[in-house]
Amino acid sequence: MAPTDPRERLIAFNRFGLGARPGDANIAGNARDLLRHELATRNIGMISLDDPANADLRGTTAAIAESLAANHERKLERAEAAMSISPLAPPMPQVTMGSAGAEMASPGASLAAAAPAKAAQAPAIEQQIFRSEARARFDKMATAPVGFVERLVHFWSNHFCVSVAKDNIVRAAAGPYEREAIRPFVLGRFADMLFAVEHHPAMLFFLDNQVSIGPDSRAGQRSKRGLNENLAREIFELHTLGVGGGYTQSDVTTFARILTGWTVAGRDGRLGEPGSFVFNASAHEPGDEVILGKTYAGGGIGQAEAVLADIARHRSTAEHIASKLVRHFIADDPPGQAVARLAKIFLDKDGDLMAVAHALIEMPEAWSTPLNKIRSPYEYVAAIRRAVYRGSTADPGQMLGWLTALGQPLWQPPGPNGFTDIAAAEASPEGMKVRLDIAWQAARQVKDIGNPSTLLDAIIGPAASPETRQAIARAESKQQGLALLLMSPEFQRR
Image (cartoon, rainbow, N blue to C red; front, side):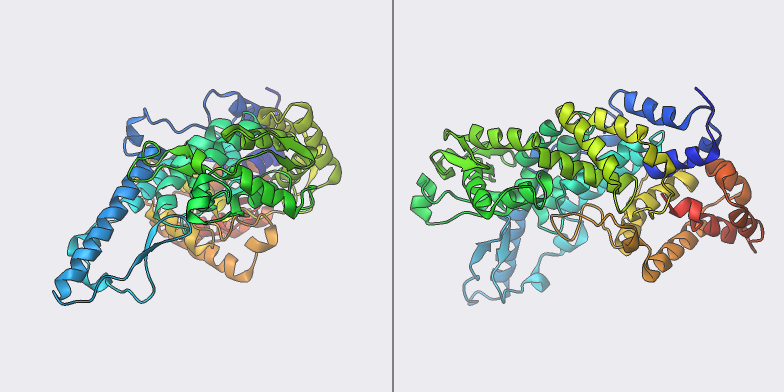
């Protein structure tokens, strides 16, 4: 490996990675080679269920099945609690189905006070699953060599986001969704990731496709229920073509018809194993359909899969993805030439995301553009963990709390478009105050700080400015010195 200058090392760990760990700043070799080596490491992005540390993780189907069963038990407990209030109590309010299929009491029903004590004593199974998945994710980001692949996982998980705020089913499935539909494909083909995402129960619940019924289908004729266009719209607008990508409202409605029947098996298991993806032919709108000027023959699940295969390779998709990647890794205002080069590679390599990742590393703009972006909340929390903490995350509660305080709770974006990726959103006075509070909290909790100036050399190295070195050296205490390090420009910016 050829030697590298300190600034390039900082770019590798900050712009592309999740921050240096003690000693990383002094690793011999070229900064680009560190990133290339991580990309070449087999299964670098995977969280293995064979690892004993991950024995508490579940697959999607099992997680959703447990949530469905737990929700049924909660419903029974509420009914029993209501009956125990008075034998002459009026009938229970009707239970309706929410947009994601979760059971919710009708307005005015308030039985929480009468719920059995055991319901308040232990966390719901969905929260247990969520915290186990959070712990595994935090451990993975802490042990990554540089964190480039983990950054790609984070990027794609935000691009194809779901939100645990939707309902308990998504809360149980968000972690398995990322492990099964995102991680296996971050260095694979975009079309394969798109297929995995849109088939996944977490996405189908999040965007309400399990309640979308073809009006002329057998189920539609019986129930008179209609289309839900959420999934079709977000696939076009957010996941592939992008705003202005050439589709029309008519294309959205047509695609919604094509996607009918894509659903999840319920607790009764009539269509398949509870919690699994199934194609319900009786809910699928029959007939040929036209999308973006092309006719797709009717015939079942393959109709929508053919649309996905085509839009995964569309020029608008390549430009949309390239623009987002350059904005994420290089600058809020993506350099046009960089976007064009990346889009061309995406098209020429048939959406090969390994080739796209290598192209990002080779871009001159990646190494010449100043580090003006601010680390996102997740990147900041990850950098703190990598810099000052050791070992596994036995309890992810603190990091989950930090992410919430910073305005980006784990797997809980405010909408289907994910969390913002603009530096100004992270650099607000209130946001920086919260970061300072977290830096102080982290500094107080480190048992053996040592010399903060030594830690600065270990994680930033020669790239640290004289001003940062002086501020840390003049700190009134080790805790203050560490907090100043965690708030320094070299630590905050990417």
